[in-house]
Amino acid sequence: MDEEIDTIVSDSRQAGPRMLFVAQRGPEQDGHAYARQAYDRGCRAFVCEYPPTLPPDAAVAYVPDSRRALAALAAKLYGYPAHRLTLVGITGTKGKTTTAMMIYHLLTCLGIPAGYIGSGGVQYAGMQEKTDNTTPSALDLHRIFADMCRAHVRVVVMEVSSQAIVWQRIAGLTFPICLFTNLASDHIGEGEHPDFAHYRDAKARLFSDHGCATMITNLDDGSASYMVADSTANRIITVSCQCNEAALFATRIRPTRQGEAYGTSFLLCTETEGEIPVSIALPGECNVSNALLALSAVQVYLLEYQPAADARLRSLAPLLSDLRIPGRFEPVKTVQPGVDYLIDYAHNGYSLRAALTALRAYSPRRLVCLFGSVGARTYSRRTELGEAACEADFCIVTTDNPGIEPPEDTMREICRVLEEQGRPYIAIPDREKAIRYAVIHAHPGDLILLAGKGHEDYQLIGEVKIPFSERKLLLAAAEEAVPVV
Image (cartoon, rainbow, N blue to C red; front, side, top):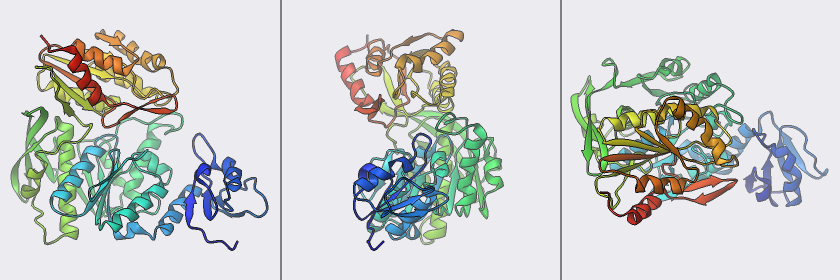
């Protein structure tokens, strides 16, 4: 084939002349079935795992794993930009976004050109871009890396999802610094992981298959030793809120208030610097663990790549004091006096229980939780959410991203659990109406948690993403509701 290829696609709808179409097999669709559509749009070069139905003038290269091939081709297309970056990878069930944003914030405060890729999108050099997945596709990743290199970024903090590892989105990438937050049963079901072992092993591959040299792990999680077992790291750094033998140990953890923010103070104990008082604008032990991981990661990076910088934890810790992360215990101040609203991304049993437990420490008059579950997948999550929500005084059960599943079906299992536990609740399928209900029935001293959506500015209904801002809906509902008596 005598034709220059200047673009790679894996979606036949984007195909055209001078493009290479990579046919990928996924949990729901097989790209080989769309090769002819790509051909009809002008594409003549293909990468496949088995012969597609194509005319004889199509050039086809066969590979054992087209997803892995796509990652290699994307790296080549963009000139191997990841080779010019230091990648910091974070995996775990919860805490990835908060930890990554903390690291990104610290590096930026220090004047180090840094980038972030994760649930919060892409950020670097004043640029922001939304992403469809926590870890973007290989094609998008290498394009983003190339853009970051042009902006003179040196280090990229990445959230690495289990799906990204399984589907080879990070194939060929090296992460010299890797972090493990925690592990709980999640993303198990049709189209995701078949069981917990598969989910756990996918996470562990970040530490064994991607050049991890320094591993920073949360010693308080029961899966920490499993993650360490096959790691290639020559240095393991531990953090803990419970074990004083960890390299970074937090003690005297106390809830605090910083304006509207629910914060935490603690004492950071280190062997080299002694005791360091720390304050963060996020609640709970879970966020203390995230802070420990972030501080350790930045210190490692500075010592390895910026030896002239001040890498003392005593200097780094104060930089976290005023950091607030969109969609993570995000306070929303309304015109209603005496009522506090928080928006958080807690969308499984593990994270919802941790969130409610953390907020209970502030002794609200009532702890109210508005939440739902995603539709058409992760069915086991619904029982776990219902059980976790029992930590609240009152629940408003609604939808999250119902997708193609009827909202009532999504809510049914959650309501069953609450009824069995004798917990007071109301079920309102329409999330906007549920928010209005929460506002209208708020009492002085209430702390109301809107869980599940967090930073998301849409709601997936059917197969369409509808604009949906919980912050805007809260503010509008509070204006209509008049002050709480």
